[in-house]
Image (cartoon, rainbow, N blue to C red; front, side, top):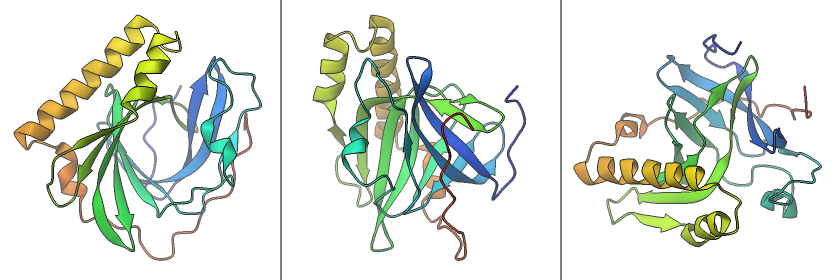
Length: 196
């Protein structure tokens, strides 16, 4: 199950799984799937669906906002086994940099893939200025309070160290995607019901 490659332009489902249940679910459109890399696009205005809980982490923090992806569309790049994905960010149509989202390694399903955001993020500005961390305090607090096991915390830190090593060597494998833009005419996918 979950071993097939997805077709370009196919709409698949990205699920965050917490406590064995869907915490947040949304559709993405496949840009490319080679087996070694899954590139998907999250369109502005994409509907987000949240699980009803209760969850050990509480409700998803985005439930405080309108349930749609508010920012410009993002390209999300993930490779099997990596504890992170790399997102291309834009503002006013201009590339502003990379956003490294530390998360559980993706697990393919027949409908798409599952993961779980682990709070920690790394911002890589387009102008080459120094990288900066985001949500380090949330990651540390989640670990301190038992939201992450010691093993999960260590995995997150190891993934972060591996990305920093790539960045400092100038070996970001994601750079070849810098100029990618979503084709005109790609529609915003419809909402995904829980458990569908």
